[in-house]
Image (cartoon, rainbow, N blue to C red; front, top):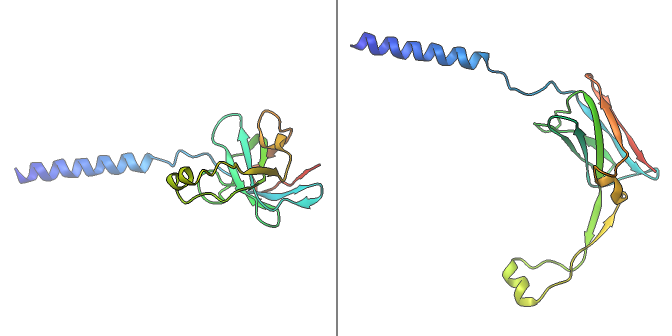
Length: 149
């Protein structure tokens, strides 16, 4: 009986190892993508840039204080799959009344003033339907800058 249990466990272990060995990450090959975003010749100092593929997962980059970004698809800074993309830039600042710490305090105090939005880059660049921006990612590291007029 012990041999039978041992043989079953061994067969199960071999099966599990062979199944796991054949598994890949299922992720496409990615290429590093970084660049700089400027508006009217000046660095955009906050926001995000999004690369939208025809198929697959989008890649997103946070724009830093110098206007630089690095795209992420799955893991921080891993890049984007090679191919053609439509691009959006979402860069805005919100200002207005300070928000209450919780919704109950907000209701009690009667705070109703909504924050106003100041677009750092014109709003049309933030929407896929209206952004004219495109990019092509090659299989090697890419430096793709955007100078929004």
